Length: 357
Image (cartoon, rainbow, N blue to C red; front, top):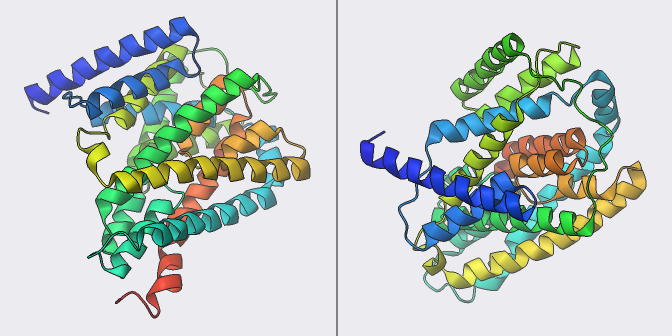
């Protein structure tokens, strides 16, 4: 990393820390993530030279993955396992919802985007609507000759809206502190923490080498979860490290927005914003049905089925104490299924007869 980029990254971190401190003083929800996210995104759009250092982003994802894995005791694992049918319904719901959102974007913009081939617009709409990780959906969209700038912008905007809206709504509604499944490891043990870091770091590196999605989050969480399920308790994750992880993740999300963001197809972004609000509404209704069927708190299932990211929704569940294992299980299983199925679905739905239009 050059000296210039390093200085920009350090300046961005200082800004993010100041924003987090203000949010802590104001008692906002998720101050260590939302404060840096808002401050960094606003300055980035304004043209400030913000920068996110990838190793710190990876460290943040690793830390959150380790912390979430500590919730999966044998008792909790049995509870999550009994919900396999609800998780499967959540996967089907996410696939249908993403397809419907993409079809809506296509119908809305097909008459306006003259000169854009129908196949390109269809691929762009489909992958922009898919409920999956931004980087992976953008990569899949590129393979189908879609406009990757619109796909990436759509996912970034949707994640921003969901991440900002849901935590504030839950805090203001008083729907928090309902979690009865706390992690079994509460004390920080120095040698145990070092061993835990080594084991989970190895899992993250292995996932990265294998080219898996979100390797630093998924690899660390899988190892931490496996240890906890086996009854091996090494150490809790220090709260200061969890706060720093949220800050790093907030910065990494905020720097996605640049000065030209609002000038990239403003009507398209407006449609994505409106559609995201509608998505949150129908997901809340779907969560209500699942809550009635499972007996779980509605708010837990709102986080589990919302069109947000794994880390962001799991952090929300952890900080507000809203069923971390259930939320994590829903989000992780959904991501794995979407990454596996969304591209074959596209080719099955659109490429048999119409991909050459």
